[in-house]
Image (tube, rainbow, N blue to C red; front, side, top):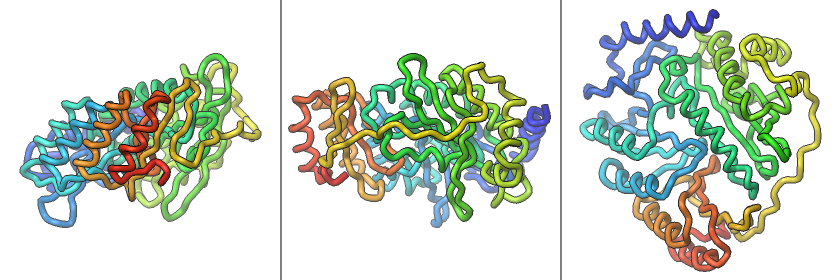
Length: 371
């Protein structure tokens, strides 16, 4: 297909251009170099800051889920290589600022020893895939499984690193109280089901100078078909989005120019849905959203609790990051979850552990009631 040919041509173009491009540090990070659609080669996940020789490094955190081991390691790395802070961004990545060129290679390599990567966190790629944490649903664990599979499919793959512009995917549980699926290129919302995980799918959303809410594309898409649908939509973006004008190179402009029906047809040319998928769906009332208490401690369906940790503007010192990890571990948690609202939460806390955990977070200056 035309998209396959274009991918091969762009990969070859990147190979030929790479030795001549000057928009990269002098140090060797060749495995992280990515050709942007404007012809520039950069190090993926790395942006230069205003001061010469200083960089921002962004780590993608699939679904926002960090094991306590990973979180502790990233706090240590922040102390050693950066200005000493995490910045949780609006796609649940962690950004590190103040990285010198001399430390850049070692820092990126150290990040990868944690099982995380900077690859695909920036640039014209399939960006970090996010999930909503405003839910008490036990189904969020199944959604994370889908996110992890898609991350393996797209992150670090050259054919998905030369897109016209970035491509954003998000997943939300059926009862999420604040889903943001309609401001992503593809947004998946869980449909209530006692069997296989199924989703309603929205396409063509985005913010920026010309914001657009996504359109309902399909309903009743089973988990087993999600990867194929995402790949097909990325290929439509790759083939039809505007490579001559980066300001209009997002998928939302393809929807604006061609219309939903035409875009749906293009996707169906690259993806064969199972028979149960509704290909011309109608809007219906959403299921009731989760009802959360105002104290930042929210019950999960499985009997545990999710304890919210409000982070002002997403900024967290490495010392406070380690302290939060420590109190989470003592409360019996195994992970922390970053959110697209630039906060974090500690899930799976046993009821008897909640009072002590809340008290310790309050003592650190992060009262859950501030959520």
